[in-house]
Image (cartoon, rainbow, N blue to C red; front, side, top):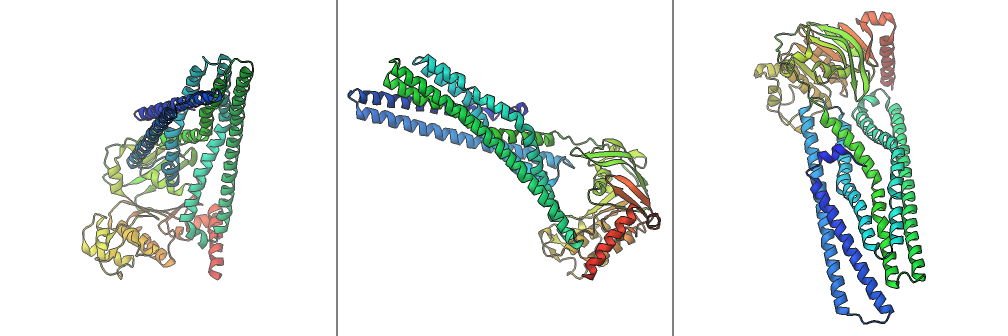
Length: 564
């Protein structure tokens, strides 16, 4: 089971793989020499011949020391292959992730690739590949060694050897789809676990934690079943290989004993054939046990190469003098082969205050990435001031658009250092905005914020991030779940600031809180990646459609929670 691209990728490291194979082959020769020498001594004892004990001990000791040395070379080289493999993969993946504005995998999947995926490829290169070459070399070497002793036994053993790889090929065809499903279930479970953990506060707030717990239980059970199917497949394949390996060994022993009874082989030759017969099959038997490693390694390689193949889109050089409008014109977008945005068309003009609402997974937050040209759309156009987005440079987009998400990172430093990140260096503006977001009582501009904002509450961290945003003079402000997972007081402070900002600037607000959407002058309701409804709050409530259904269901949940 070879991945040609993987071999090409590790072409420089293959010399160490060949060194491992050479060490294994030399160990086989040493082992065969020991077997031959032991048999010679046993035969002399059987015939009551003299044995030079000192000479015998020195030769055996020398061969054992040589074997230990070769084993050390094999282990050290395997460790070197392991180190080089992991460092090269991780370095290339990190470089690619750093270069890409938006990788084709989410955070949890990337974590799995960098840990489990690379570990699988490490074992693939340091164990499976050397064993594959050695498993081909060992039977041929032993065949050449024993064919002068007994051609019949040698050819019989050689014929039995290919039965093991044939059984592996049969199992491989059965296991290919199974392993792909197993890997997808594995990464999917990790992604959903991380997402549920991050949104636990929101789930508790709306008493939906039990629903998501049950869903995660189902995902975990599905992963358990797929894991058990993989294990059953592996155990069955191992059983088949054991039958072939030990069956072939048994045939070799029987034929050797028959030849001994017929005086074709001497006692020493018979013992040697018995000792060598098992070595015909053990390398391929061990290769078979590495089969699942190769399968997982290939799956991991395909995903890693998918990431490494992703190219950063070439962006234009045109600058935007001012923001007048953004337009989505029949846009389609798929993420990891899953359609997220479907035939989406809407526009935001200068001075608008637009709210984007919808259930989780409806494509709301994806719009943010598309507006910054982070992803390549499959169909349609995104236009700024009637000019396609790809003609603009990233720099000009960052100058005219400002984004606040729910997971903005807070660095270690004083409040003044944080606010200076906005590009505004006016101390009076700093004090004014701190008062607006109710952080003026923390201790002034010299107040030290710890790394990650550990000495601030969740709401305070988000308000500090909002203060930076407000100080950054932009044409279009995008708030992506800016009030998610924070206390009610901080929610009100942030919403008041957003509404005040919307009086003079263009604002797009993505929110899961339906109540906040009524403050916008225009509301776009997404469902499964397309626009289900749009209009003002009054128009949508009078329509009694999807928006009103979402609004009232959330209102009822909050009312129940409030009564409790």
